[in-house]
Image 1 (cartoon, rainbow, N blue to C red):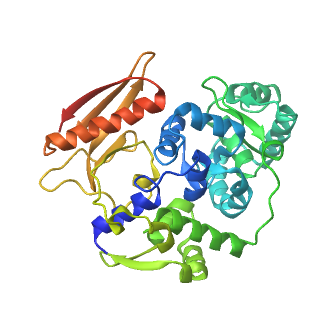
Image 2 (image 1 turned 45 degrees about the horizontal axis):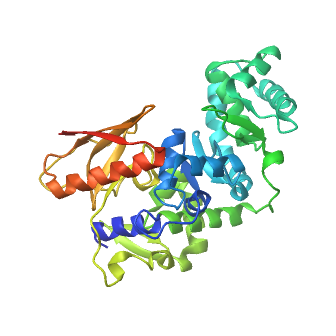
Length: 364
């Protein structure tokens, strides 16, 4: 399969160019987990793919518990649908917790400290008493546990990985924590084999065409587990080779690709936020620079500008009281039409924040 076709399949499957999904939570379900340590950037990722097009709408769904923010899949924040939380934690947390355990041991913290932290959290958060990290740190310090810094974060992360706590409603700009059993309804348990197969089906369905390497990085799985999972669901997927590497996707989820319809594919620009699934998921096969031009290299701390099927630059934003300022650094080869498309993409960001946009574009 040609790279251009692969990229267009992905954008349509993820609903960046395909019909938007009804809610932000539907996007989280499609993608299974959405990396979200930069919370508002991750909310914009959901808005790009759904009819919840503003930060206010996306945050309302998060606050309602339709999806939660927690440490899952890898030792970083993700959005995950409430009904998927428990089985994904059961499947992927043991490998992640081993990484966190090494960090705890460097601070002379062991399972006794973890056990005490879990007790304090259960008591402090009980009765839907949602607390911020600082408030939890105060409770920990009173109990003789680390009350700040990385040690506090690692102890709370273990509580997330073990399914005790997840996000509660946002308070102002602060993330709060809640007891999982108080905000997430019970769900049936899955065997490990069932969970592996479901994870592979969902990943290749929501992120395809993608490779085994993409899956193992995204889900912290071993190659052996990933191959076993793919073998369970392979009959429902279609395989294509990209530069000699097998990739899989669900053909049913690309049925509405614009190129399969009579109308021509419209030109569009996309401001993909930091850690967006359309960019971060694919370390090997990704958006190329435009021919004859080399935009700034991808940077995990800034967003990626894509026009049509090419990576044409980077962007970052500052949200002020009266406007959103977008600073972009774009490839010098962009023509006037393409620059106009980037301007249109910045307007979507302004709509998301409910503010006018100042776009400061520089040529690389």
